[in-house]
Length: 466
Image (cartoon, rainbow, N blue to C red; front, top):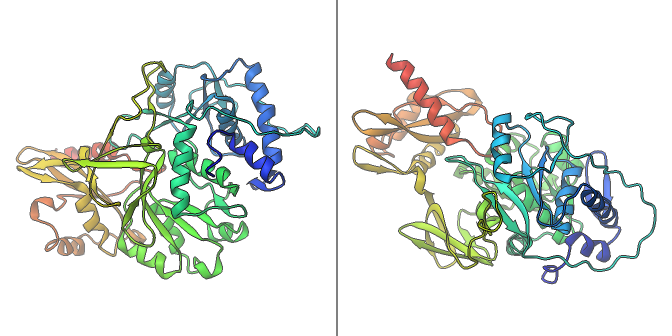
């Protein structure tokens, strides 16, 4: 991979292994040579629509082979790929379109939730002509994508990356989670999320096969497609562990990358007992995905090409994977200096190349003069066997200023509130114990919206008062 920084990764693989399998979906198989041809055809179409390097192409679509091809076409052509969650409301989509400030939009369906009209693109591979390929250079410092942060505790921001960011991100990940030709990496996370975008780039750079399926993640899919690499959030892991046949001995899985939120020790122990190699990951959109990763433990090792320091417990980041700036409508004043540190608002401790995450700076609140870090309470809650997931937010209190409340997803749907209260008595100081526990509402995204949970809790409590 060390020779690929200045070259289009798809063309690189098309020259190296033209018949190697690049993408496999339920309906389609694409070799690297075929993928390269499709990108060439699509690049010509974008040009006919008036797009040029530096223009922004908004893509509102669920994961699909076509969306991946567009992502890779933008990388080659210098057009900026801007994916947006198709499940957003019209208001949420228009808010992001206002920031992106572009007339170029592509929709997987004819109409989007915002009732927009998109570009007409032909993704059929109708060229049978043999073309002699040669290495294709790209500008690795040019912005190639804008991905919005999840906005779990605040307003989303439009994060810009260049190819160099993703290249060095993949290089660091490769040392901990090796990926090679013949491996099959399942795209289980959306392309509008940094983890999904990075999965595509890592897989193509490694010359491995990207697997895409409309089927919901299950054991049959993992067996049928012989998946070797898999990224999971906590809910996905929990569901898989609920199946007795989810065993390393009966599957092809080599590595499980775990991220998105906290994983209980109980889940991690079960994963290890099933024979899997798992990797906990600390990462963020502003650092092109992974920053620090573990192997079969909770000990996070800082990956290469990332620089990290801690000031007043806050994690500051920079390095070759650090984003190039937040887009604010004009590229000229959206870029930040290359050596500038990024204040992550994450709290942690660093010893050598090892990192311990404490929580989020913007989640800390004060109750009766005492500092409360919600992540500490969540960690304790996850230790209770009947708790699958737990999130803690602060609600207004006339006496203490703010008090903690919890949202819990109970195992088998059985609420064991009395037993949980007893469990917490000797594990949390009284001011840290949640004053109310609510059922965690069904989640559709990768991350829970803490702001939304706070609003739900406040509404419930206001009703109780009156």
